[in-house]
Image 1 (cartoon, rainbow, N blue to C red):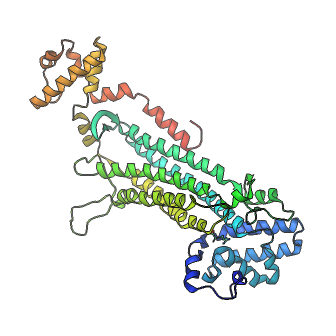
Image 2 (cartoon, rainbow, N blue to C red):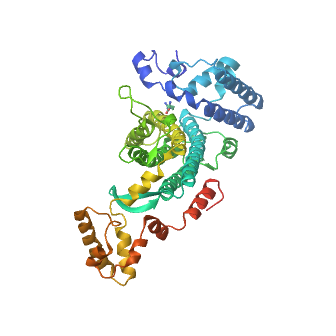
Image 3 (cartoon, protein in one colour):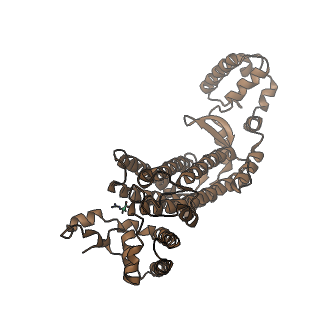
Length: 452
Ligand code: ARG
């Protein structure tokens, strides 16, 4: 008979057991479960709820179990439902009936909430570290190509020439906001639920300050009913992860587009590309495509948990066990995506000539021509109209701005003079963006934690 079945006269239905068990995925909480239980046992001993000797025995037993798991000799049992019961049962097996005292003044409800917060705090640190790694790759690529000019787009139509560095720094900013969102999420995850019991608190003289200190939490959850049934911290992580994936997916889309034969602004390094099983000429940006695709499942997990939580009465409900697989998969998707993106970005080869040539096309200097007329005293709206007519004429003639004669310009406005030739993509970029070096330095300081 399983330890939890004593209330019932019969064994659980096999299918019901399989359906409710979570050991298949919550096993990965083991380091946090042991850490939480060690702190709890020490607290019980210190407070005289169990004897100091019993507490020591329990701590020794839990430490030995940690060793067993690390060495792969611990056998997980599906019939024991979850990681908490597995570890507790093994403890009693190892140290005898004293092991049964560990669960004094505790419920699996505050235990699992504590485990999840400990897990998530570690994961957030990891996530921020990987985001910085990815940011460094963006900066390295920007630095190595800091003079490269590309067409800037709106509506995916050539709009104005920009520096590639500026474009990459836009992704840096997105990642910077992502980091701040994860830091903010950490701030709320950093609260201790342990001591809340099943929902109503526990009738023992426990020391939660001690528990918080042992487990590295800055605050103690003030309301036990909220503490056992709050999963906001997981939802917040998933929301931040969704936004991060959305950002990566946008960059992925640009890498796919830019590495196409039609654009050819960049080439994905062979190490990050795949080829086709039928078309020998192909070099496919699968890494970027998969990142774009995987964004969908990360959004899905966010929606999944939001939906699972929306109708739950206070306090704990078993529905909450559904928080785990989605979160684990979110983490297992986001962290490798950040890692692979750092490599993909850092090794991108930029085709400066091709990008520069594209930045010449599409009458991309039209705004500069209008600004030129404004400097000669023409109101901007009028200048805009003159250049619009000039563009229509040039298209009709099949000529670029460069190829137009000065007298053709002058048919549209007498204010066009020889100096109209000084309007180049370089001059355009320079006029709008003289500070890219400073922007790169600021970004570098931010990522290395020296403020901005
Ligand atoms: N496996 C459960 C979960 O993940 C642990 C808590 C179980 N508590 C309970 N009262 N059944 O949520």
